[in-house]
Image 1: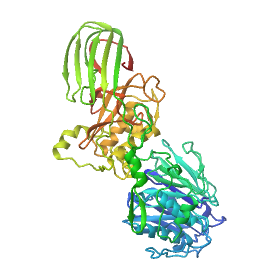
Image 2: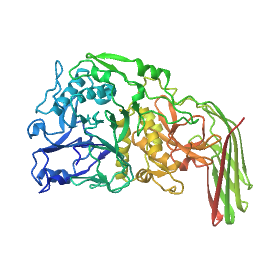
Image 3: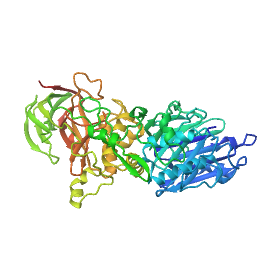
Image 4: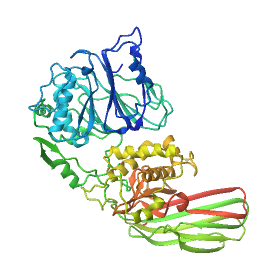
Length: 634
């Protein structure tokens, strides 16, 4: 039986808790409690029971009640040492500050109660050491006017908890409904373990002799999550990763089912300066004790399209190291802006695209539509392009409604083989996709469009026609990225782009043109087209205009760092206010730069497909072979 259990999911889940320890003949705990945030509201609901009787009604309620749906859950089973077995002394503790409810659970026991500050704004109702720690933490938050955890420098919080840890055993979890903070006791007297829940799944059950946690009893949703517990619970499904024990003194921050940062133990000096009751909090700790784990810190690029590691600009480093403001007697460290992708070199690329159709019987009359000429604009210059077709016919070149250069081809000469060859020389110049965005700039979701802008962008705002229940679940999934990134537009898009790259498996031959974005979301695998369609759907559900892009990807002399090579490629572009169309490649988790050659754009694949056609007379069995090479022209 875990003394402490904390969970965070991307979007809401409605788990079932079966307290087997309250069956007759078992050793009954001194109390238990469950806290969560129904409907994603800042108001918390807490259900707890001191001195429970065997088979109590409340335990049956928490097992069967389907209204306990939330993104964050805190659960605690009490073994009393401080205070009587009463409601006031039973965790989770809940207090309101900054327009939201905060919750706290503590496993372990301090040797002495922490001394309150000079003018504590929060005072305990009960007599436990745990509530005293919680009240002191909230008093310090209020003193610094930090209204949510994301506003506080996490090194400061880690040092506060490390100082309380000097008074005894402290393994704890703190949440404001958005962020979940987990701290491991510095002596491992009460260890804490983490596991990751990875979709897709149909049934996820964790449990031991005293507790069963069923995450899917009320229906399975393809949601990623993090579970922390003082005792590992045995999984009944392979989708649950193995439990890992946090190093002593470690602080982990979880947001919307993803670990966004992990901080190592505090130094003795910093912990001493943050002693309980002190007014001075510690600023930034050395960068070496911070590890980014799981989902990247919003905006972090794993690599640029050129294959180079991301870098933090000098301006960002300066902000991270030097920007401090004096607030309420506490030294506050400003958080750095997300790192930007490194500027890529312009490229001169030679593209050869060969498409060959073969038929069992001669095709006597057919019409074909070709979109094979790369786009020519300020970020991509078309030097030359030749297009050849092996069968004579009549044709006409024109610009389609999306601005693509297209060729309509009528063939009335019988053929059993049709070869279409495209040869292009292109210079790509999109070297810095975020050059429009100063370090301090911030655009938030939802976006507001003028009526005429929305009218012009309407084709790129409409999600695919899917059942409403599927669109609702996809919208919840999209909002998990928004909430994880504080409603910041660019950070949410970068996080979404990286998550599709990391959480979804690239599997060729497993999907078709009929595969929907919901299928990709539920199965967590696909190819570039599927990932692009899902990204488009999520963006449009958030009110962000997005369009489909078909083109080519330069993979360099070696393609080990790319999922796509030697084929046409697909990615998404979103329209950003006062910045225009910007490319996101969820297949590779990068912003598009000078490795991506754009050929056609549209609402979906049908608007931008390279070759399509209709056979009116003849034909039969068809085979298709496509060959693409993209090389740097010297």
